[in-house]
Length: 285
Length: 134
Length: 122
Image (cartoon, rainbow over all chains, first blue to last red; front, side, top):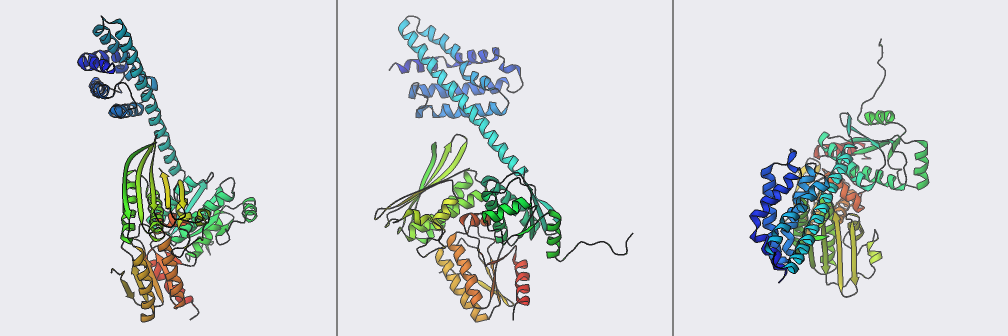
C-alpha cells in the first residue's frame, strides 16, 4: 500500500525528526519567550510524533478517520493550551507546519533513487501536514470562542447585583433589557440571595430598563411568580408612565403584582409590610 | 455535532421514572450544567417518562451527551409503542390533559429544553426527542 | 407500600417530603392527609418540600389538590421551603400554584398559618 511508505518514513526517523523539528521551532523564535520552555515543547513534540506514527500506520493520511482521533484530541488540547497562554493563531499553527521541512528532508534521503515515489510522498506529506494545521487553527478558534462564552456568562452574573436594603428586604436594580437567558440568571441570583438572607420581600427596580414590551413583561412576571413560590413577595418599582401605558396596552397580567413609581415608595411599603416605618424624629434639632 | 456518550434505560414501572430522573441529574451534572438547567432537564424527563409509561404502556429513553464546537448538550429520546398521540398540536397546548397531570406535561416539557420534536402515528407509538444545550 | 409520615404539631399537621416521590406515593399522601385532617380536626397543613430536587406537573397538581381539599375541610395549607431551581422550573413549566400559600421555611409557615387563622372569619 502506497500509504504505508510515508508512515514508515515517520516511524524509522522518529528520533531524528523530533530533534530537527524542535530545532525548526526554536529557530522560528517560539522559545524566545517565556510562555513555553524547552522541556514542555519537547514533551508536546514527542507525544505528537508518537501519535502521528501510530495514526499514519493505521489510517494512512485520512485525518478525519478514527485512526487519527488521538492526534486530533492532542491538537485540540495543544491549541487550547497555547490559546490560553496568549499564542497567536499563526504561532499555534506553526507547531504543525514546522514539521514539514524535517519530514521532506527524510523523504528526500529515503527516496533518492525513486523520483516518482519521492514526488508522491512529498505531496502526501504536504497534504497531511496542511490538513493537520487546519485542524489546529480550528481548534484554536474553538478555544477562543469558549473563552468568550465564559466571559459573557460571567458578565451576565456581574450585571445582576442583589442588594440587601434592610433585614428581610432585598432590592434588585435591573439595568438593560431582559432576554430569557438573562432572566434565568437574574432569577437564580435573586432566589439564591433570598435563601441566604432569609428575606421575604424583594423590590425589583426597573428604572434602568429602557423599554418594557410583552416579552420583558412576561420575564418580569416569571421572576415574580418564582419568588412567590418560595414565599417571597415582590414589589416592582421604577414604573414610568410610559411603561405603565405599555403594560395596560399589552394586557399583561401584572395586576396581581404591586407596582410603585420609585424605589423610595417601594421601600416605604416594604418596611410597613414588615411592621416598620420611616418618619421625622419628633422633638428633634 | 458529535455524540460523545450514549446509554439507554427502560421505562416499565413507576420506580423506573425515579431512576430516569436520577440518571438525567447525573448526566447533566457531569456535562457541567448548572443547578437550574439540571432541574429543568430532570423535570422535562419526568414528564416524558410518565407520558411513555401512562400513555405508551412503557418504553425506553436514550441518553446522549453531545458536543458541537464549544457547546455541550444532553439529548434525550423517549420511545414507546403505545397507541400514539392523535393530535400532536393539541397535545402540546397548555391545559391538554388525559387525566393525570395539570395538562402542562408535554407543552411544559417543551419549554424546559432548547430543541423538542414529536413523531407520533396512530397505533405506531410516539417518539419524543429533546435537547438542552449548555 | 411506603407512606410519607404526617406529624401533628398542635393545631397543625406537618408533612416533610424527603424521598424522590413516585406517583403512587403522591396519590397515597393525598388520601392520608385528607383523612388525617378530619381525624385530628387540624386547622392548618404545612408541606415541607425543601428536600425535593424536582417538582413536575404531577407533583404540582398533587400539591394544588391537597390545598383545595384541605380548604374544603376547613384547613389552610402552606407549602414551605421550595428550592430556587425548583421554583424557576415550575414557572417555566407553566405552573404558578395560584391559591396555594407559600413560605420560606417551616417557622415562617407556622407564623403565616397562625395569622391566617387569627384573621379568619371564625
